[in-house]
Image (cartoon, rainbow, N blue to C red; front, side, top):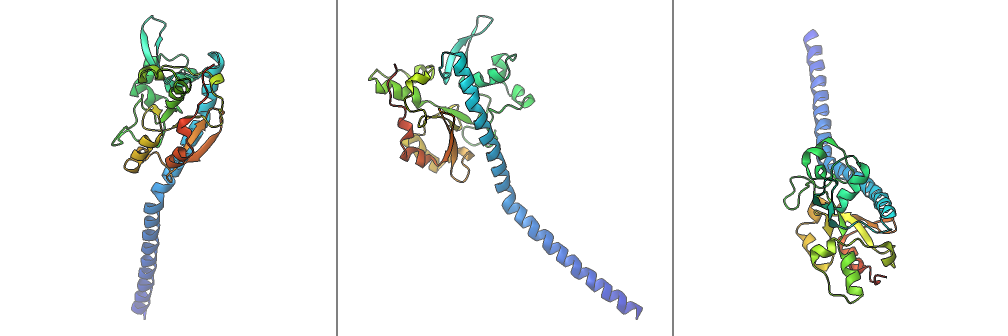
Length: 245
């Protein structure tokens, strides 16, 4: 009688154990499937918040510099008389960390010790092509703004480096609502023209696409989420077309 009761209890415990094992296995499978997707969405949300904060930083810079956008990359003279190249993202960092020497922004040690919003959490440092680096933050400025303005007035198009060094005045942008300014990319500038976007088929923004879409900050401050192909279809890479005053 006693032995039978023990066997019954043992059998019931074994069934319970099997049920628990099945539940744990199901949860593990769900976590394995959904976990990476949830993490990507969390990083995408953080990236979106970063972009929202970049807009006011660029507006602050413009207000202090004759209503001009910062150059994508220009040579500046430092307090000690030496010169250095300063990218647009470093200009934003200088507004957030005014006491920090610009040279520090180019070091990984500084980034490790400071949580700066100019780093895209979706861009891995170990990415196969164009991974994260201090000068490759994962957010990029539209390098075609200055190029399109030069083409609009029929001027001889400057060299690529000269175009990057142009500080575009807001007054030259006749359609700020359609003028894309900042977007995720694996470099500090982007084009998103037909040629560049076609390469995304094999290297889809190097991990920066979320459900095949990216957030784009426009000059007027609003953000739209779209696919790179939609960006091309709307011909945003051709804006602005208004001449410089």
